[in-house]
Every structure is written in structure tokens, then in C-alpha cells.
Image (cartoon, rainbow, N blue to C red; front, side, top):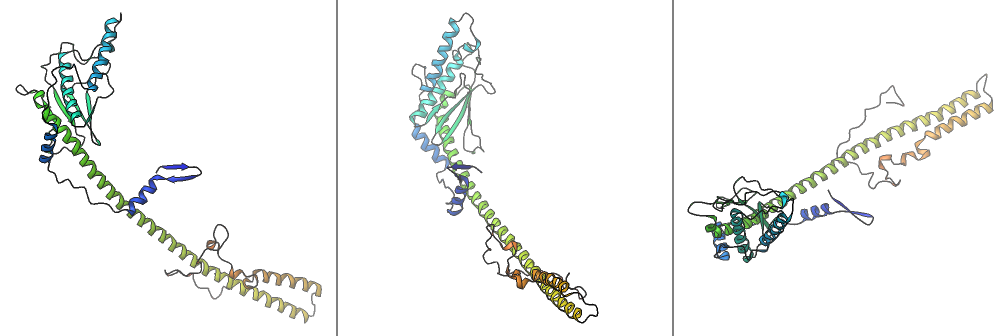
Length: 356
């Protein structure tokens, strides 16, 4: 749980969000009535015809940046007396030129449809991204299983353009059955002839991802709200249970205190009667104690009786420690008897007056 400090107070942002989620009504689940076939038809109309990139004289700005950086590396590599492998040009082979032309055609079509294509910050990228609304779609284009490196060329400068390529969309979820996410060169159908289908399905992937995110977000919030409500209910039940246990212990402590006070009062009265009996018998004794000694002892004994007398000291009105707040004030409603039955302590034994 994240806590943010503002000035001298703490503000728990997540707790506020959870409280708001518990109070709000979860809307109905998102509904997307448009079938997949209708989505494909709508996107195909939006995309229209896609022309192939015959050359890279006016490429998309993302592809132009790759070519510009490659030209700078090529110039350093030619002029250096000790050329570095990392400065070798990456996009000079016919194979790489064809790959960039395919990417360029896809990027331009996406840009016309309002999407935002991008190339990762790599010298020799193997993956490309397209921002479709709030969704990011990634795809790879190249030889299946080929590992591209940022510090060395992936292929020879004479690698032919006829070498087969594969374009694969990274779905990252359970792929819908109707969705096409992979295309490969065929002898009678190169990737250039599939550009419209590729672009249409790239946009469809973005739409399907957004739909999946909406469904996932709804399910998450609904499930999270249920868990929060259940946790809050369990918390309140636990608080109520602890309060019942506290009231039960408090009731037993009150009864215990009552018994102790009754025993103390009985003992105080017994001490007073004992002092009176000692004085009476000392007065009629044949060998009485001196008046000074008997008075001193009587004062001390009666003082002990007063000390333990709960009525004289007012101890019977004092609350228990459990009934006091931290500031020393009595807790409210401390005298309210609990609704649960109270387990009483065992009864006194007839042969034991002051202990149980």
C-alpha cells in the first residue's frame, strides 16, 4: 500500500481509491455488438488500397531515421583506417532494402489511417511498433528464428531479396480464432501482395486488444469490489467479535471486583467487631493491657479496616482499568451489560470466608 506524505500528514492514495470503488456502482460489462467480420469490413474501408514502396527515396520518417543513421555509420566505416564492426552498414543488402520497403509501406498506410508507427531505439531493429488508440501493437518482419544484433550486421551485403520473410504480430493474449496474425512469402504470393490484409489485421489487433483490456478492467474492478466488500464485512465482524469478547471479560471482571469488595467489606466489619471484642474483654480481664497500648493497637487495627473498606474509601464506585481511556477518562457506556451470557466464577466454599 502506497502512502504519500503531504506536509505533516499522510495521505493513502490507494485507500481512497478503494473506498471510492466500494461506494460506486459497477457499470454493466462492456458490450461490443459489432462482429469481427464487421470490424474487418470497417477497417478495410478505412485503409483502402495500399501501394508498395518501390524505393526508399521518400520514406516514412521512422524508416528515414534508420537510413540516415546507417549512412553515417557507413561513412565512418569507409573513412576509418581501422573500421569497426559496429560501424558496418546494416541495410545495404537487397534483403534489408526489401524489408525496409515493406515496413515503409505499412507505416505510411498506418499513418494515413491515423495510427502512430515507431521503431525501437535500436540500430538494427527486429521488432516494430504501432500505436493504435490506447493500444500498442508489435510485429516482427524477417526470417523466422533469426536473431538480430545491435552491434553487428545480421546478413551479408549480398543477401538476396528473394529470401523468404515472415511478418508476425505479437498478440500476447489468447488469439481470437478469426484473427490472422502471421504471413509468410509464398512462391505465388509475396508479402507485398498481402499489405492490405496485414495492415487491416494490425489495426484489428489493436481494436481487439482494447476490447480485451476493457473486459479485463471491468472484471478486475468487479472482482476487486467484491473482495473489498467482503474484507470490510469480515473486518467489521472481527471488530464486533472482539468487542463482544471485551464486554464478556469486562462483565466477569466486574463480578470479580464485586466479590472482592464484598469480601473486603466483610473483613473490615470483622476487624471492627474484633477490635470491639478485644477492648471489651481487656476491660474485664484480670491482667489487662494498659490503656495506652490498647488504644494504639485499636487505632492501628481500625485504620486497617478503613483501608480495606470499599464503602468508606469509595472503591466500589471506581471503574476497572479496562473501563478507562488512555487519558484517564471513563469509557462511555461502561455499565451497559453485554447481551451474551456471562460465565460466572465458582461459588464460595462454606469453609472459606475470604478466599475462593
